[in-house]
Image (cartoon, rainbow, N blue to C red; front, side, top):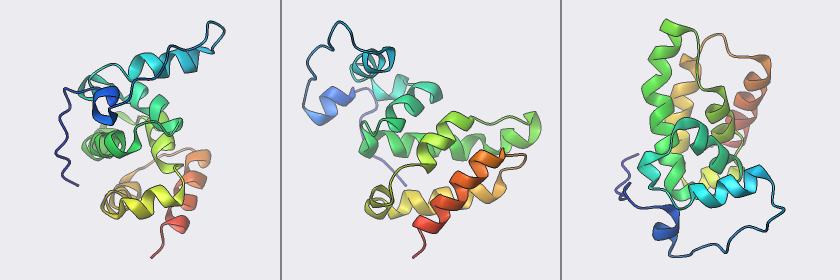
Length: 136
């Protein structure tokens, strides 16, 4: 899952494309996505990553970071009883073609999900759908 991307760069820099300014009447989510695309990807927190990933923005660069965060924090879930459900849901609910294009990330996520405890029934459904969609 090694990702050799410069995390000091923004999605705009990595993609080589700057989005036009959002319209004045854009939703908060749209405005946030535009703003977050300008920030270095290494500075994005789990919530911000989840927002972008949930909108299928920058997946090639952000999914590896998100899966790394999920892997690194799985042990904390046992101690604190909490886990970043929003990031987990955003990652799990990406379409199957995303996982087919990044099988190593899918394999890592498959190693993570059995370690989670006290997951809500809604997320359990997302986990099952992810596992079903990524069956080899």
